[in-house]
Length: 139
Image (tube, rainbow, N blue to C red):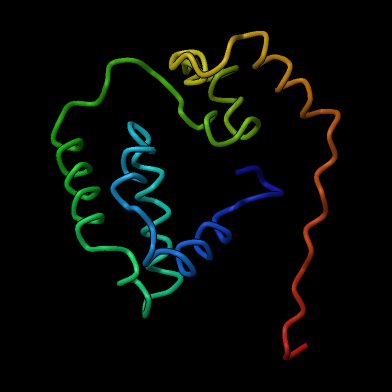
């Protein structure tokens, strides 16, 4: 989910094309504690394709919105953690380096510090691929 790349459109297309055949229970289980990411994509899908929102089973959205409701009724966690680093290696570095948040990649044992350093150092050497602007019929 970097500035020059966002796969949300691909995810919406996958749901549109295969959502009726997906094993939604398995998908919920795969997202585990990161269920908010799934909910975000499903909400976006309903925005993108309002007439096809029934592709997503109602019980899935009920489950996820129920989790959200329960979570918001609880006090927030005490630790200052930024999970943004799990979706973008660059955009949330300021949170870690300047604003004092704990990097979720370390806190969750997803990566070791040496790997994070290598991954972060590579940002400066990689050139973003230029976005291809679609040509619309009215042009």
